[in-house]
Image: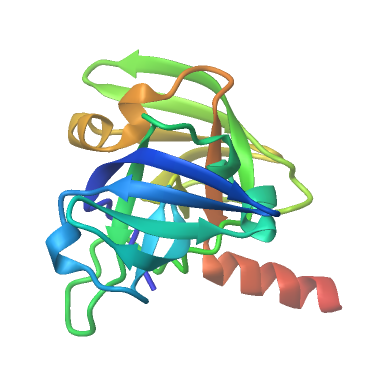
Length: 194
């Protein structure tokens, strides 16, 4: 379980394809604090550390993860958002995030807005829904939806989040990972039963 408060950015320093899987070597500032078998969110997708080295760790993204996320498009040198799983007893600064990416979205527009940044994204409306002022996780970042339309949403990013996540590297047409709010997913599932 995660909060969607990005702890650090990391850099992809290795990428090895094996059958339908991709093994990523990730350089991270907290390398000395992690161990094998720990869950770490990578652009919001929960992956397990399988190897720990002096300056990097290794995770494996399986075919299912590669189909539903933007991780398959990562190349050596790319910067990703990282968050280690939350500890019991800590403050929950974002919202409940599972690290189970639902789909990707495409960046439609980026606008500077008097000190903040407005991002607009499109996604397949059959996969999920958002509500204005509801929660959304984009590339692992817990955010509040500004405007919500079927298959489209916008979020406003404060300068701190813009600079300390990979949002400052996003461009129009880039793909991002979306995890819809868990409560909204349960409500939608219950409504579809009737």
